[in-house]
Length: 96
Image 1 (tube, one colour):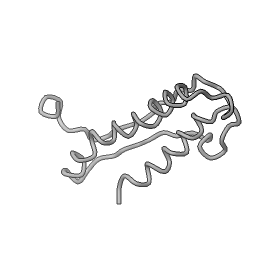
Image 2 (cartoon, rainbow, N blue to C red; image 1 turned 30 degrees about the horizontal axis):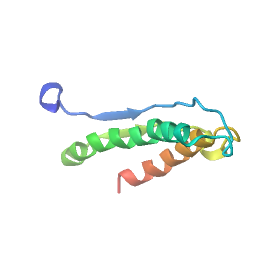
Image 3 (cartoon, rainbow, N blue to C red; image 1 turned 135 degrees about the vertical axis):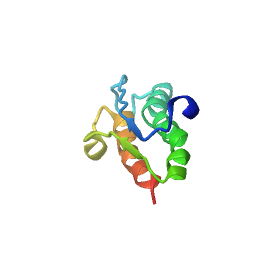
Image 4 (cartoon, one colour; image 1 turned 90 degrees about the vertical axis):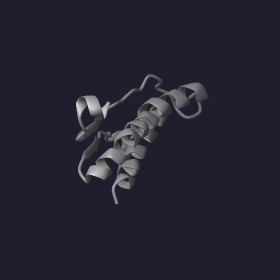
């Protein structure tokens, strides 16, 4: 793909999905897994696709959008808030 389109200079991760508003006691595992996969795992997969190419060129920008829910949490947003807090942690591990 890089040969056809050129290098990727900037990646903006701006994904948010919250379809299951539930407390921990009412959150079903399948719903938890779905939100974690979409909101966090896909962010990781996208970064992984461009990271080596950016590092090789010694240039690139990765912007990952989180939410205040990552700081404050949300009583009925356990999966969403967990993902948004994790995005902040993951972002700090990308570049040395």
